[in-house]
Length: 176
Image 1 (cartoon, rainbow, N blue to C red):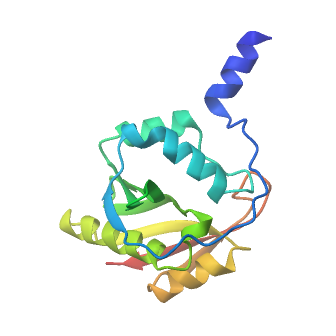
Image 2 (image 1 turned 180 degrees about the vertical axis):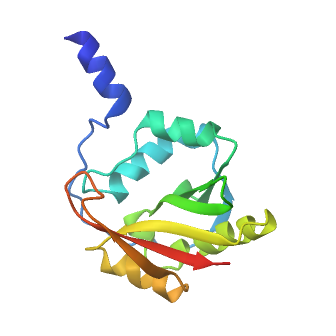
């Protein structure tokens, strides 16, 4: 039984996402910096707060992404918190950037931080000669779809049962 629990801890985040009421953080300055393995603990905690529908990445997944040479990872930091937002983008062999996850702490949302992270990633991809970026978004996540459309992403395909709970996703793409 202990072996099963050990395996479960490696591949599944067992900490339940708590129901927290969100009190907006006070106005502050933000900066975008690289995200490194040294931020892993803070990243795991923030990830659980950002994704409450069970699509949380595990420690194993984040460790893999942070060590993968074809993955770009960035964080938004405030003077009081080194990780208030994050983004991971895998550079595919076909010359496409794939946003695998992006998250902003609930108390720091609606401040343009997701746009800032996406813009930073798009610049980094252009500098590498990448001319297309893609991502998936829940069909129920209207706020995220609106953000992406506002940044010139277009839904090009509906993917059936993409998420673990069976919800569909839109594949959205942007030409850089």
